[in-house]
Length: 447
Ligand code: NAD
Image 1: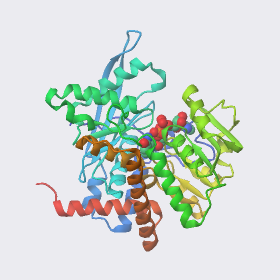
Image 2: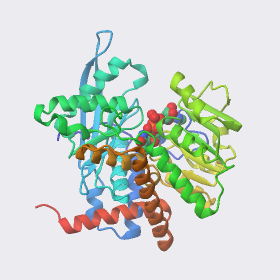
Image 3: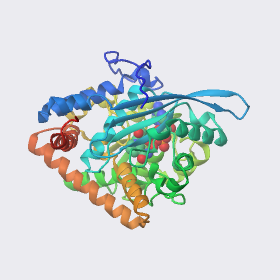
Image 4: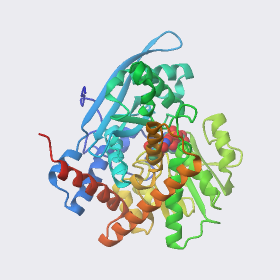
């Protein structure tokens, strides 16, 4: 695989100290280096379990980092060059697996962190996948459907044999969806040769049902988060019926979490997205709000809510906070401001380590990303399996399998954390790392 690690990205040590309200509207680069944060988390968990230094050294960097610059013709006839990424972190437990992100601030270190988290997520849930992540640095909202199709197909072609149904399997993430996955699949099917065409549908997951996707995949991450919340509530003897919650980001993860949680009697009192925040102490209807977002692209101007500032959002009285937007949204000031009992990380890497310490000191529970938002990769695994076996499982079967797995992992992380006096993030990492370490110990290092 071609490697390129030369891209300028904020380097370790350049991470600014998170300041009060300083993040709203600032770029991802200004918020700090996501890979530094992922590395700090690895370091902490490795220390807690005395991880073999050789295994830690292997996991400290991705196996492969691919950057490709590729041309696409725009609707007006102009040619534009796009920068695409695919980072393959680790595949000791199975093929690389992870989302494709279309975002104007996508960068290599962000992809490295997100790919590493996929490795630990799959290992924690005992899914036979490794970790990968990729995407394109551009704003998909600025392009027509026809341009998006050409950009997606050209990236897939550029990645070529660097992805594969038993090698590296992309899925949706921020800025991508089932349609993008179907274009990726169709392009890949058309470059592998006729006799292999039908057997490579599982090159991507998160496809539409029509094109071979799984029932329950679109809602899976939100549903998985709600399983974590119901388990937490059961153990804390907390009644979700009549409780309140806020959600940052109202895309796939945020909107489905809100819709599913509201069915349990919890009320969404505030939400927000890249354009702004809204609140209604009497409750926002997440179903109507999702329709509004479908039509307008944002939660702002929703008639059932009043516009509020980002600071007000983080100061809202509520029981549960679900960050489901981008990374590094909860800094020290946000951690001090939050008035909830539980933070459930829908987004990947939403919390700075310093902020997490504050939340825990304040008695706010944190269910970490690699554990809580893994419904997506779990059902992606089910989709991949269905494609591989030419099967179609009904929604009930997918959802009951997801529920079992989320609850099993919940109990595992809870017991591990309690027995060893660890926070849940470190416990979740530790379980995944121990599985990876056992595999390296058995297999050894080639040659
Ligand atoms: P999405 O593109 O569907 O939605 C993202 C949401 O975040 C949108 O509402 C967007 O407006 C909002 N947003 C973007 N920038 C923002 C900002 N600066 N402030 C506030 N809101 C902002 O993406 P998604 O698939 O829902 O992913 C959201 C998060 O969940 C990401 O961190 C992603 O990596 C993570 N995640 C997604 C999945 C999945 O299955 N889609 C699985 C696990 C984790």
